[in-house]
Each structure stands twice: as C-alpha cells, then as structure tokens.
Image (cartoon, rainbow, N blue to C red; front, side):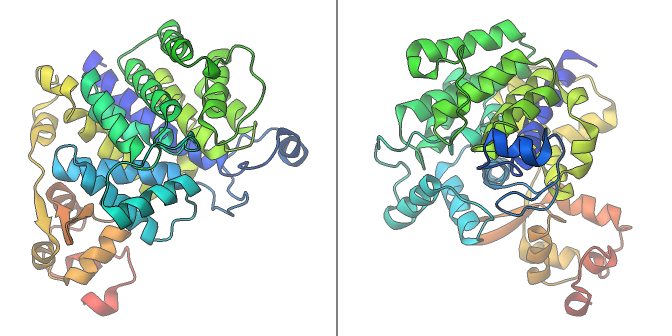
Length: 387
C-alpha cells in the first residue's frame, strides 16, 4: 500500500469508526457502569436495544448528521453552510430516532430566523457539534485554516460555546493527524494543547464521568484512547462508561479508526453495522478526501488506469426527472430509491438531484437494460407503481 492509499483507508476507517462507536454505544446510552456490568458484564457486541430500542447495527443522530454534512459537500463540490443547515432541517423533519435538545433548538433557531449561528450561550457546551466532525476533517484535510472555518461554522449552527469550539477543533486536528500517520505521542500532544488552553479538559486523573457535557465526553475519549492498545479495546472501554455512550463511542471511534486503520475495525461489528450506512460511508469517504486541499496538492495516485479514470471522473448532478427518464420510471420512484439508499441524491433548494455515478452504477448492477430499470433490481416494493 502506498502512503497515499494509506491516507484514504485511514480516512474511511475514521468515518466507519464513528458509525461503529455510535451503534455500539446506543445500547448503553444513559446507563451507569454498574447497570451495564449487571446486565452485560462487559458490553462488547453490537446488539441493539438500549433506551431507544435500536436494531442491531442501527445508528443514531451522531452518524446521521455527519452523513448529512458529507452528502451536501459532495453534492455541491464545496462547503455551503446554508445547504448544510437546510439538510439538518430536512433530517429533523424526518423524525429521527434521536435528537439532542441543543441540536433541536439550534435547528429551530435557523428555521425561524434564517441565521446560521446560534447566539452565544453558557449552557451550550454539549457534545452535539463535536460528534459531527468526521466529514469536516476529511473534507478539509491538509488545510488548517479551512478546518477551523468549516468546524466553527458547522458547530455554531447548534452549539455556540468556547468549550464546544475547542473540542471540535481538537477532534478535527487529531483525526487529520491520525489519517496522515501521526503516532500516539503526537495525538496526546494535540489533546494536551486543548488542556493548556482550557484546563477543565484535564484527563490525566479520569473521574469516570461520561455525560453529554463536552468536557466529560472528551475526558472519557482521551482516557481510553491513551490507556488502551487497540480500536476495539478503546471503544469497549468508552461505551461501558455509559452516560452519553453513543456520542462518546462515535468520537472515540473516529479518532481511533483513523489511528489504528481499517485492519483493526472488528469484522463482526462491520457485519452488524447497517448495510446502507456502511455502503454510503464507503462511498462518501474517499470522495471527500479527493476534494480536500491535501489531495489537490498531491500528484495523481498510483492506481491502475481503470481505477484512476474512475477516481478522476467528474460527478454530475442529474435531476430526478432526468433520472426517471433514464431508468424508465417516475420521479416519485427515484425519490423513493434515494430515501432507501439505492441511489445517492440530495435535495437542493427544493429540487432533488441524483449523483451521476450512482445512477450509472445502479444501471450497471441491473444489467444495463433501460426498460423498467428501477424495479428490475427487485430491491424494493414499488413494482406496482413503476411497472
């Protein structure tokens, strides 16, 4: 594996690590360590349940909001905060399985005022912005100024507090450093810089608090990141602290995933992870990195001609109407397939678009026959409406 290929695989491991930590931690969210021990001894399987009653492998708001950011960035080809805010609105209107109170308040503030930044609030030092840092770190890889700009913009949509800002920036820097091959000492140095600036993040004497307060969250993440020796051991330690376990798991997962790389992501966890979520992360992650300042400064990757052509291929946006014509179906069925993850798309300014490479891949997987393409795949229940 070349150094450049290693960067791409670590970036994908960071995003997958977020989802794995989210799915693993959803089971023990709001439980105490004693309750976890009494029920599971040690919780180390993606088994679902928890107070939300999630299915095994199901993710929550941590992953869903991160995917919302990633989709908009890829769709537009650049950072566009208002469309990210619109995507959050659409996500909230879709009645997600979980949404934090500060996140809800921030989205409603945007809906009512159109403002892209919450007013500063001493009570907004939660972890709901920090959990969304994986796509930001991938897209801004190689440019500290862009990392800071995009981080603070996305964070302050819902959380405007210096401790949230500091935590988000620290997480982004740690993920990026790990993707680029940083060792444990370098990651610890980045964590220590946060403590120097905001001493309340001190984590050397861990007290065991794992709440939604961003200080408790990062103290938990740092403690297990620096006292364990594998991705699995780190995440198991974090989620067995309970509290806001899905978010501590998600943040630990993105940093540990980037640091340990894809080889250490437990296969049994990956098999349990929601298949559409995994597929979308594997689709989005390399493309975010290719759009990053790091990629723009690098010569073409040493790939085969076929893969090189695929990587450099321009992704175009195809309207739902045009996609329906290509697949001989209706725009409504195109939207249904976007919702189910069979096609990749996003709503922009009231119009739905499908990504051209997603459309081509779907057609190829279903034999290239333009007649009744969508239903021919036998992957949905729309045969009566698009036949």
